[in-house]
Image 1 (tube, rainbow, N blue to C red):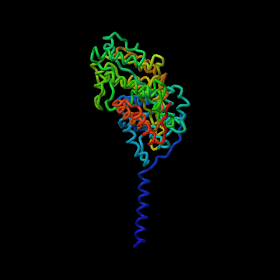
Image 2: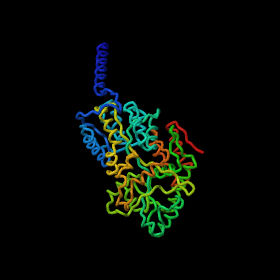
Image 3: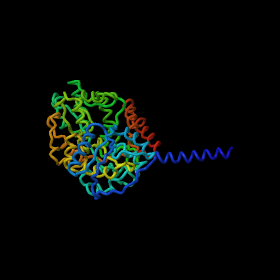
Length: 442
């Protein structure tokens, strides 16, 4: 009886092994190079990408690609929310080696966590030869972010969009107190201006999440050319730069100029404030979501950090395209991405659709000269290009997203108590303990 039982178990294990092998089928890895002949046979590429302007960009690029090269690709678009949702969708497939889409758009803030575990599951744009040929066209800071995603500084993805943080402000509000917003020389000065504005007009000077801020704080760190985490994942919250940023935001709150908002009310709070800070990517969103506010708003670089040190630009967001090794058509995907991200017509089309590509050549096209009536005829892309050429060093290791959660908790506690040690330093120590890293200080 025991022998029979052991035989059944052995057969079940063999069956399970074959079942897992079938489920975990891996497409044969191919060796591709940027110099390979173009594949022109009919091919359908499955693409995971966020809905909206990025989808429109990819679809238009496919049409240009087919027309200009004689290729014959169709796209099967699967819309996935950028960031965490993409990671949650692809991770189980990466674990089991299921068939993957041919192209995945992934937020730069989320990608390092995926590559830390699954770098070998993706083809490398570096090894393909993409950056040897076109690397000098892309903003250095974008490529630095992508290099830091891997331990050997190999760039895996094809670089896509890249936007800095901006101030969105209402010039008429500031004119009521005789102030030209773009002449304000420091955050300290702005707090005094915003107090006067609040007293005269009732308008708030800035909007922040009621549960705690991390975005403005990180922007202020960036202005001082410091990142939240260093290349080893150590957290920088015991530095003079971090203390200065925290103090400025607390001063804003104590002066009564902050419009607090809940999780679903950010855009409403923005519209009810004289100024707010958001990524350059939000410019198109606001024009679509609040058409009646046309000509009400203007865009500007971040308020100078101080009179003595105006500071650098802060990176707000960006995404890149990845080609999995378990994709069905990886060679075609790599050829298409290479074209889409370097062809002048595609780059111009990206700007026309509101996608701020990281290829600097886009900003030399006619599309970059476009004036946005919504923002009083401002040249949006000219502004982005100026800021992008002077952004601070940004480090986005695998633990970055979790670090911002600790930072948000720290901010909320600090706002309530004013105790830096029992808020920022406490949460930094909790983060450091969790990941076995250091709390960096002066």
